Length: 183
Image (cartoon, rainbow, N blue to C red):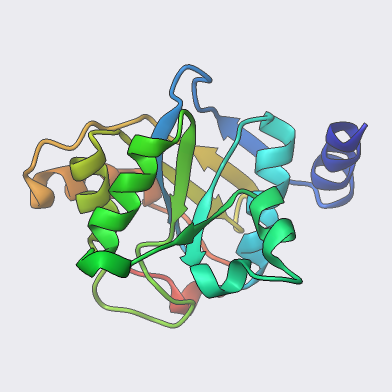
């Protein structure tokens, strides 16, 4: 029932579509979400998750997972980030991938909704450390589509792999286009 409501709102009322898909057999991946220019991106992700029926996740500091919001954040796919024991973020998140049977991590490499001149590369190193593919996902407000791209297995050559991934975002327009990363 919830899936039908999501479809009705997303496709009919909002006029959006989903292009491409993530193979359900890909149980673990890093989803590279761009452009991230608006808080509207959050509900687009929620609708996409609900319509595709695939578990999609995010990480946040563990303090957010305490009462009263902890249960809600977990229900929405959240995983608390524990950085105790001297682990850095990459190692901490890679440990989550190891522990979970299914973990499709959504990450916005821009790191903020403000204009940036450089992407944060943590998503890439998380995928490398966890030995999972990177799936480029574009929230294109110009075309009103969420475009799920082809998975890329990181090779260790960040520049080359990033050039391949960025092709997925050519011509994509964020909600606030002037804030989008231009590379």
